[in-house]
Structures are given as structure tokens and as C-alpha cells.
Image (tube, rainbow, N blue to C red; front, side, top):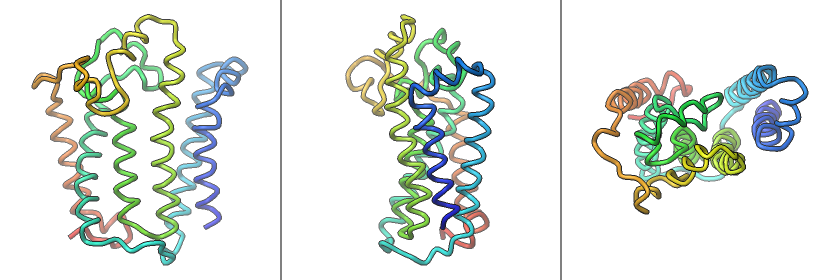
Length: 225
């Protein structure tokens, strides 16, 4: 359990304690942006790998709650939505991603009309789905860490971008929303059939199907059937 806790704490510190604070700018100024991204990526990978290793090593026997069949059904729906959102969001040029500010010139299209953080929402829904479907302490630590990071990360990224003086960022923030569908419901955006990324939709559904059928191979024998 110690390795899992250390990995989760390190993962949160790297993302929220460094990337999401003024320390980010200090480090970029001190060692350069490219070097910072290299170190940041290395620490992110190392702490996440420690999380995964710690999670696999822990005996999942200490339960705080026991999921019901209804919860499993809800989780399956959440995972379908999360994987489609995650894949389509990844395939959509998004200026909020690392070193992707050039996408500001593309305007607001596709999933960005739904939310400016589709990847973060995909991860959040994925984590919440697994969180409610597992009541053991180890799963709560692992998936809870991912959920917290994704949720707070959206606010952190928005706070940083709102300080940008580039009028393109100001326009992007005004025309998009963090909360899914808020920009559409408020009339700031109009989602049409042309905004549907069919390749991402099909790939997301395919990924869900693969995860559904092969879940027992990657989860230590837990089948979704």
C-alpha cells in the first residue's frame, strides 16, 4: 500500500503542486521550456508507473462499500461515454493541450463546442466509473487520484489561460465552456452534424468493445459479463 500511496501523492504533486502553480513559470525560466517539459513528462510517467505498480501489488480486500448490479450498469455507460469522449477529444486539435497553441487559429470545432476539456472529462468519467464500481481502499486511492487531478486540473488550466493577454485566448475562453454543453445551451455555440468526428466515434466505441471483452485480461480476472 505504501508504494501506491507514494505514487498517488507524487502524481498529484507533479501536476497540481508544480504544473498548476507559479512554480511552473519559475522552473521554465530557470531551465528553459523544453527542459521543463522533459523533466515534467519524466516525473509524470515515473509517478504514474509507481501508481500502477503499487495498485497491482495491493491485495484488494479492504472494502468501504460493495457495488451493486445497478452500479455496474451505470459504470458501463460511463465508460462508453468516457472512451468516446477521450478518443474524439484526443483527435480534436485543442489549444489547451501542451504546446498546441497553434490550434487557436483553427477556431472552435468538434468536441471543443461541447467542452474545451474533452480529454480531461474523458479521464474523469473513466475514473469515476471505476471508482463507484470498486469499493476497496486501493481502488479508491488509485481512481480517486485520477478523478481529483482531472477535475481540479480543468480549473487550474482555465485559471492560467484567463491570464493570457493574447486576444485569441480571450475569444476561445468566451466561446467555449468547461461544463459540457454549457456553451451550446447558452447560445455561444451550435453543434451540427459536421462537428461529429466519425472516426473518433467509431474508434471510441471500438476501444470500449475491446475493453469490455478483454477486461479480465487487464484487471486481474474481473470479467464484465
